[in-house]
Length: 232
Image (cartoon, rainbow, N blue to C red; front, side, top):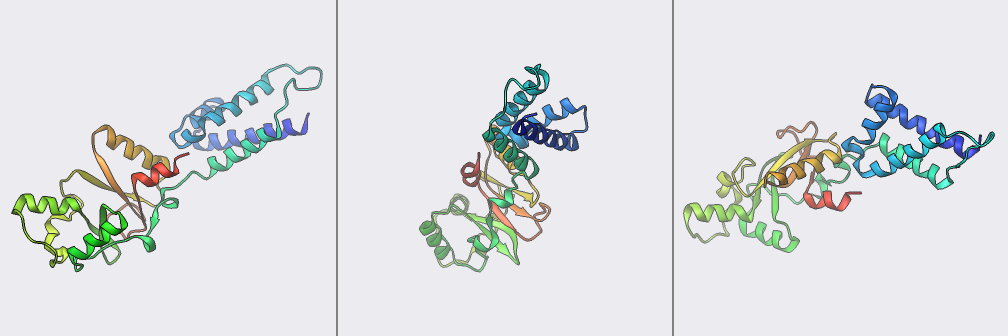
């Protein structure tokens, strides 16, 4: 057997083993389910291509003792890469802004200073954090809601605690927020944003904690822009 062909078939067997470990069905069904799983949507075309090549090699009669088609070295490298991706699916924490780099505020910060910083940095939503835990979010919409409820008022010298009734994560507004565990896969975050969009809901941020509990310390934040920037 040609060395490259042998290596390709060995690698595809590894892929079949991965599929069977995740989907304990008959081998061919496991591979099909694995290829079509949302986790692999970014590499689905390449996986399907490799499966077609494997099936051709296995089921097409040889010409004498030789395969009628031999995979290229690039094909083998591609399959190795796909196996690595299948074994190491992307996690959202890998692409999130980590705690050390998050611009956050506290209830003691003054509104004018916070809004000035938001304008300079181009931020629209800022998490309010106490002892490492997200307790709310400040945004321009907070000011807008306050004015609607209380009328025009000269703002600037007040601390954020002045708006505590409007900072809640469950406060009804044009956007929403979600919590996810550090083990959440990237494709799951993609699906979350997509599903929200179908229902005309806009998720501004996903807060990442150890188990996805909102009372746990913040590990990172991922936004729709982070998702778009890192889609394959």
